[in-house]
Length: 185
Image 1 (cartoon, rainbow, N blue to C red):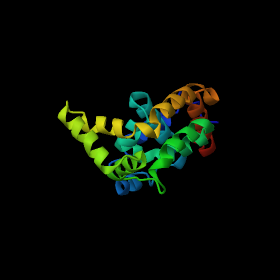
Image 2: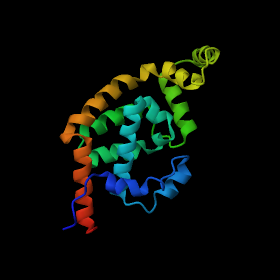
Image 3: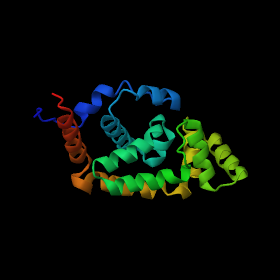
Image 4: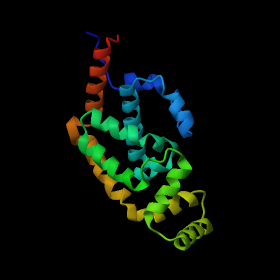
């Protein structure tokens, strides 16, 4: 049997610089050689990092949002089915297939908001008038309020620390099982 891992991060850290989330084609190419279980841990980790830093809107807004399908699958793989369901519920309004391109994801968020083009223009003009460098993002905050990202973020935070012993424990157990099954040192 292989030596015990200290943390799931022992498997995730080596691929950190290899995953390119800048666009769909680069992302697909960059993950080709990464073992699926390691990719799923990586995606779940970065989904939670974004959630804890700024919530679901930030996750979908940022380039790491490209990994939402893998994050959902990752939470399922480590036995955090409720958390996977919450992230899936947040991603569902963005459409199927899930928009891997960041601009397409932004468009999908705005379309899912149900706000008319004129109302969106007004929101973004108001934010631009008071722009302190964050106007575009704050426009998205206002425009996507009806998508329930704030409530889903709260649910995700709670589940991340409680479901299946919390993310750190669940992810580390999964990583250890993967490493043992592969006979890795």
